[in-house]
Amino acid sequence: MKSNKDIALQILNENSIGVMATNNNGVPNSRYMTFHYVESKLYTVAEKNSTVAREISEDGGTHILLGYESEGILETFLEIEGNAATTLNDAVKQQLLEKYPSHADGDFVLIQITPTRMRIMNKNGKNQEEVHLI
Image (cartoon, rainbow, N blue to C red; front, side, top):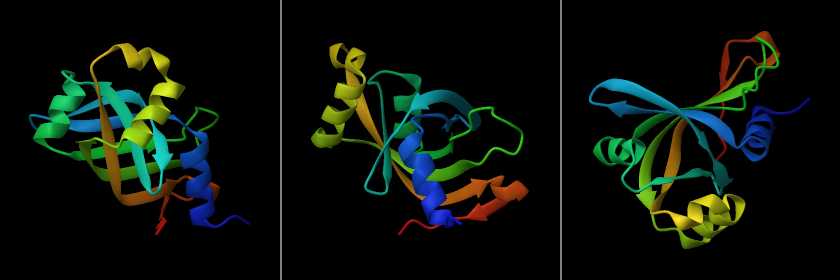
């Protein structure tokens, strides 16, 4: 039987598309984003002048759902709360640009999400289980 940590790492490493919510003047604003997991952090890219980049600069709190693929109502996925900020991590930025070359032509920023809370949802029909990766 896999541990919660193993399940969380599997979801983080095998799923790149999730829903990211940010704060837009006190109102949640959600959108699909692609994520890349590197050394206990999630990374994504956004246009420099996008709504998500502005919202993160104003309030870095974020909420992410990752791993849900609509295979069933009890599908296991991660709910991640974290702090987001733009970063200059060139190694990760290069990895993401190689994975998504369409971003190379634009004026993009790299967003780093540091998880503050992570829960596995719907594991074995249970509502939620806290998981600690470190």
